[in-house]
Amino acid sequence: MKNRSVKVNAFFNTFKEFLDLAVPLITFPYITRVLLPDNLGKVQFATSIVAMFAYFASLGIPLYGVRKIAAVKNDINARSRIFFSILVIESVLTVLVYIAFFISIFAVDKFNKEIALYLILGMRIGLKIFGFEWFFKGMEEYRFMATRNMISKIIGVFLIFWLIKGPEDYMLYGLISIITDFFSKFLNFINLKKMVGKVSRDELDIKEHISGYVSFFLVFISAKIYADIDKVMLGFISTNASVSYYVTANKLINIIKAMFIAASSVLIPRFSYLIAQGQSHKFKPLAQKAFSIIFFLPIPAMAGLYLLADEVVLMFGGPKYLPAVLTMKILLPILFLLPLKSFVGKQILITFGQHKIVLMSVTMATVLNIILNSFLISRYSQNGAAVATLVSEVIIITLEILVGYKYFKDLELNVPRNFIYIVATFFMTACVFFSKRYLTAGFAPMSQILASSLIGAVSYFLFLLLFRENLFLPMIFKMITGKKGGKKDD
Image (cartoon, rainbow, N blue to C red):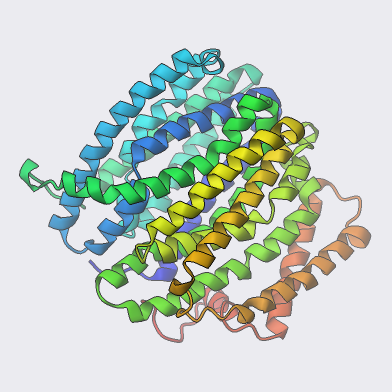
């Protein structure tokens, strides 16, 4: 099978992740105003609870499966054996997780009050088996995943605007997410038939994969629990409305964050493939580009969203969601921290087999996050959860860099080279601040966001152009003009 261009993979994976978050933002202003904070918070809290159970059914497959499939993607027999072995294990785990899930929703009073909602959203646990994201990522089928997502998202948008009419429709809102998820999984089956072959029972390597999962499972489950524990604790300690404010702040940040992570995460299967093929000499230049992406866009986006936080929340949530403004500002550094964490942990340490370092860092941060949430949520509600999340992210990255430093020192990442993006961000911030105060003061939120974003983008890229930034601007110029040059991507 021919290797696909990293640039093409990055484009389609970024487009896929963009759809995952941009499409909900199309519906979000409507949903927030129709369902209102309390009912929207019920759905978001239940979604977090279901996600926690679904993570245990995954057993670290999203991390383990990508690497295993990527290493043998050109061998249909090998990848078929791995695929069916993993599928058997995941199916058994899902049955066990469902047993625990049903016991929980009937036994816990907070769940039992909304049992119909939990039964609806609980279908996502079973559907997760048939996602096969790990297989398609390992095969670098980013074009298919992007196309599939686009079709299912269009269906979801249509159903939301057609069926959701009032606050009482919050369970229907949850059902629509299940319908679109089911359609996406159905498309997976259609594409999967041509990518795997028949495998006999004797060819399955279930025991081998179970032993290989252990370290990946611990890393995966720690990271996922850490990602959702703040929303779960908010729902138990505070109110449904506070969950809604917190998720609103997160959602507005996540669309930009996911694009940055997606652009570089396509390198994970490529890194694994290069190492498996003994081509580690190609690893370094790809790692350098992935590292620079973290500075190139997340830092200016973080500054721009801080200046436009009030307008963004007003546009997407409305006046009832203004408590999310401060929460959003507290969380903004995550735009830089999460792509950095993805690079350090997933793209470098895990690629080199250093799962224990990632596990240790995430486990310590999760414990700290739970402790901080216990104290801060009761006093500061969603803002306390935001502070706890921010502190925990700093702890994870610091530990991973300090303990795993020897895996970075030979990559020649050249941190000072990326200072130009920080200086350009200061210039951009001054331009946006000046325009908001003197040129666009009094604009409606939408107009203010569009005008400020345009001014910010122009000033940022103009600064980089004047100071001859030579890494990303030439790539962007080639994409716009269609001119080819330089050496072909690996």
